[in-house]
Structures are given as C-alpha cells and as structure tokens.
Image (cartoon, rainbow, N blue to C red; front, top):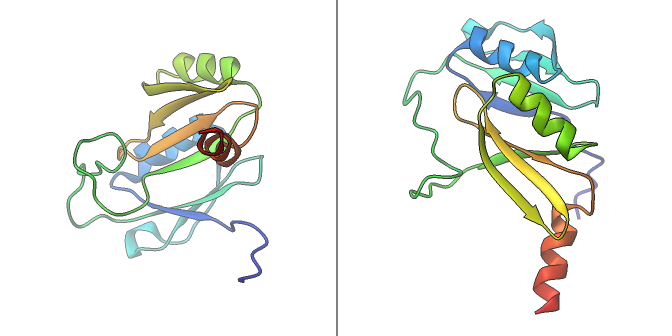
Length: 144
C-alpha cells in the first residue's frame, strides 16, 4: 500500500487566466504565486481550508471542449472536484449571490450537493454536511 498522507494540490488546465483566477477568488481562494503561467507553470491558489489548486496554461488545443461530467459523451479523465462545505443552504445562497450558475442539485440520504462549473467548464461538486459520499454510496450498495 502507498502511504498517502493527503492531497497536496489539484492541477487544473485553464484557457483564460484572468477569468479563472477571478472565479476561484470569488470562491475564497487567494493567489499566492504565479510561477509563470505563460510558460506552462502554475498559478498557485490557496483556500483558507488548506485546499491548494494549481491553474495551468496556456491551453493550446480544444479549449471549451471539457464535457467530462454531465454530457452524454463519456471520455476518460477526471470528471470533477468534490469539496465538503459546512452548510449546504448557505453555500447555495452564496453561489447564487455570486452569479455562478448551478448546473445540478442532488440530495442523497440527507446530504445536499450542488454542482457548478468554472470558466473552462470544469465541474466542482459542493457537498453539504453529513457522511462522506463514499459512505453514502457504500451504504446504499450494501443495503441492496
């Protein structure tokens, strides 16, 4: 077994540096360094929760074609980033106040989740309080 402690960061390839930085800043991320975006190095953004994202660019192919999560075509690759939030209702209200489109809702065994997209259509799942999604799915499978 690999002795993993936790995620270090998540890399997201983006096509518009300014739009993406602005989007993630609205979610509470702070840009702590631009390692050289135009040369393919990350813009490092850190959230007070400790989540670190690296925005990578520049894109040189197929901008706007990220259809991994909610399109009928299912390509291999990472489909979304899911983060746990402290209050589902407050999160939904915040997202709406920010003018960010909610592209999906789900409530599963009392856990409320919403889905949003960044400027490159990368999906973020905002999971409300309750058991982890892994627990919810495992319980549902084992219950029959």
